[in-house]
Length: 92
Image 1 (cartoon, rainbow, N blue to C red):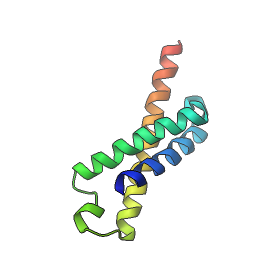
Image 2 (image 1 turned 90 degrees about the vertical axis):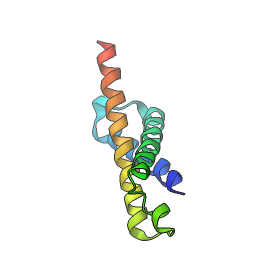
Image 3 (image 1 turned 60 degrees about the vertical axis):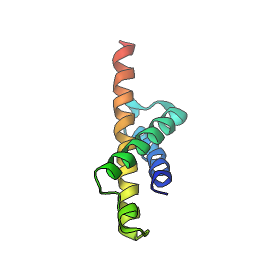
């Protein structure tokens, strides 16, 4: 369940980041793909650090879900920014 929340929030985070940083945007599909990958990585890293919340507590409380959404969204946005910068540098 944590991974699904991370992937979905990553997709949203990637598209929001692409909308805010037009110069790094990869288009809707590219933003979504980068966001999903970044959100999945963010969720896995958070889980490995022991801050997964849902697995540790055995439940799905609001704090754990908000943490997963935040980590997925941030992970998606960060990966989009990195991929956008690399793409921009390669175009020069």
